[in-house]
Image (cartoon, rainbow, N blue to C red; front, top):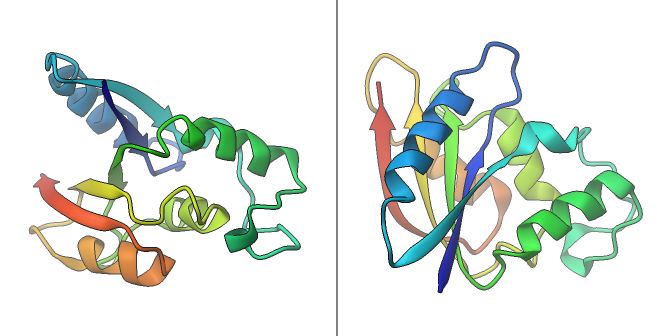
Length: 146
């Protein structure tokens, strides 16, 4: 069965990401054609990218990176939905950093995003995640939540 990770991208105290992520998960889990799991990057306490080897090699020396890699590996053949606030017409730094930690897990995978925050819907988030991360994510869908 198709497995889809709904990834909460913000780690900020008082964030709305958890609420938006759970909202998306509650809607998604009513489907019977896929399994959904909520993954919160705040649970991994990722520092700024600190691996000595470039992520494209997949040689992780830090425990936090290995834990993050294991969590995402479960979905490596499947799909991702990123839940992210929009800051300055782009994604939040915590999500960008979490994406940067891993490379092979994202390459050629289908992904969508749910953007929240900001006064008006913007395409900034959709542009900054794939371009800034230098991954080969295949963007399928995006939506904004006021």
